[in-house]
Length: 488
Image (cartoon, rainbow, N blue to C red):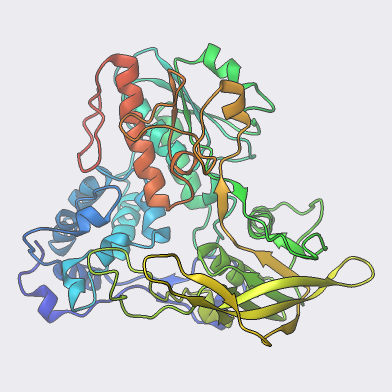
């Protein structure tokens, strides 16, 4: 695969970023395209390794060495076909995936891994530019009807796969436009929304119907779907946010990260009026939580003109190298610095927020923290201990809670009599993705809990296979690692 000596000749290279002072002035994507020769060289770095562990690192089982080789040889259309055989939406993963495939790359054992994610993005962008991505409606219809609830990556993947099998698919979305957190959660500077819209146009041309502004369980009873459709696939995500139950958490200015981010997505999309506008402009902002959502809040705050942005993480600062107890090819918990962090945020680790402080009008004006340490115990979980005398008061007018999600909303589950697990995810076995109610399936974060976009797409594809089997007795839709063989 690739050039036999490519990994010895070429260093890893990825797209560079526009300067900070330029990119924070708007919400557009700011990566700088690479030249075709540079991309071919990166494809050439893919080793002819006996076992491509990148396959196991990728939840989709993408055929990574194959499309890397095609890029190296300049066969871009072939590369696009290989990529789309296992991934419905590489334009999403190529921008937003943390690339577990790269952490599993054999070259990454002692060198910089192949820049798989960047190659993936450029393959799909070339395919759209060249007009190779076209609607391919099924030649025959089964006359079976499937309802997909939720239009995030899991729902979209399930919908496209089931449509390819010939079923009539309707996607229900409670927000005003499809996309889930891809549209109302991911900042536009990480993925502009026309990227979603161009793919939705293809899906609609293929015969998928989208019904927005319809909250199943509220606007429309879930039981009605059972009457109107032959199968239901629940892909509503894990949307219950984790709170910080400390004194002052009800003050104006203590805001859930997703409320902040989704409102800004709508603002960029042209919405001008909100019930309770949330803005970081001229404020001292503290983002509590060190994950991707926290990073997104940082970049958005800078673009809104925040006075200062600080990022708190209760965990200790990780190392930049792979920890000894997380050997290759497993995903390592190492320190990751995002483009948003590099825009000027100050990061603090091993710090816990104890209290929010308000003024007489109930507005947030500061918070109190303490330093913490994690005491390791053999065979047990580490114990969190506050460092005595480390309390500190911070000036803050906007605190953004980026603490993750605790599970799925239960309205639909209650109406349909679905079982849930201990984390309030809808219980559906991985062997067939079916719930305890026949004909009702679950996939994505709503089934497995908060996870990655690449996992959501994988879940949607897997669930589609089992829904098709339920409806038809067997299925030609591919499972993980298999190419698309749709029923036509």
